[in-house]
Image (cartoon, rainbow, N blue to C red; front, side, top):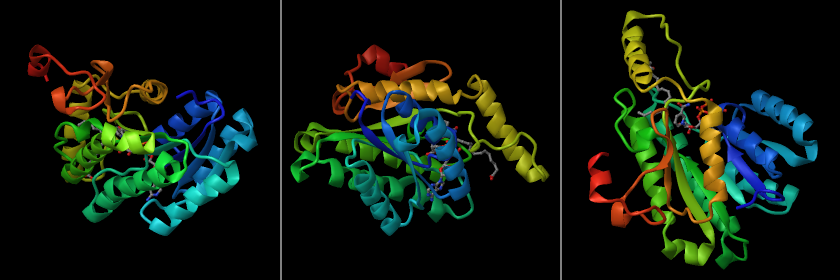
Length: 273
Ligand SMILES: NC(=O)c1ccc[n+]([C@@H]2O[C@H](COP(=O)([O-])OP(=O)(O)OC[C@H]3O[C@@H](n4cnc5c(N)ncnc54)[C@H](O)[C@@H]3O)[C@@H](O)[C@H]2O)c1
Ligand SMILES: CCCCC[C@H](O)/C=C/C=C\C/C=C\C/C=C\CCCC(=O)O
């Protein structure tokens, strides 16, 4: 998809990867609605991007993605304000916390909600113009993350959702591509500090940073954004699961015959996974 003249909606856009995806689409000539629960940060980011790319190109909408009413209202407001919707990026996410139900709500239930709302408004069978939904999963959607079992479960769920809706059965009716993006550890505010306030916490942090350093350290937001733009622009990718890692850069998770929209791999390639 060429982004010039298109309208995108990004959840969790106030900072980190969401802000990066937003700015990359503004650079390509799209208009973007930024949704976030952090109202002050969201307004600040929107103002800064508006000064750079034009205030008429951006719209900030305070929105808690776990609240169905707020999500429905945000989608309606985007359509009223910009008159169209072409791209939905379900990006808002949190890492493991004591309240595991909240991790599930934000990282998976809200992504399902955002995906269904995107299909509802963009689907050709409902009079929409087709479009693209990119769900931000993680490499934790493909492999185990020892210090985040629920986080890992939610990201596996996001991958499964995107692959299933990214099949020709759905695309033939909706004209909406659905893909998942799976970065490894990236340098955003979600990352924990290196030093903790208690010895128990320090053990976890040491394990996290030892793992991260062993993988080549943190990705830059710009490296993930480069992959994101490839996924936006390549209309042949539907149900595709893009990985972004320090070791291999941008590539796709091969699924063999079962993976729609991704190349079928050879046995030799599969054995290296
Ligand atoms: N940074 C990484 O290492 C990394 C790696 C792989 C995947 N991811 C995924 O990328 C996405 C973005 O993460 P990030 O690293 O930019 O994190 P971040 O913490 O910098 O940004 C997340 C944003 O989501 C918003 N948010 C959280 N809960 C919300 C809610 N209920 N409603 C609306 N907005 C909410 C936050 O306010 C914040 O602005 C997440 O889904 C995360 O799981 C991050
Ligand atoms: C395994 C592949 C990489 C997945 C990246 C993932 O999507 C992003 C993770 C972001 C931050 C790291 C997660 C947790 C913090 C680590 C330790 C915290 C320990 C403290 C605590 O238990 O609260």
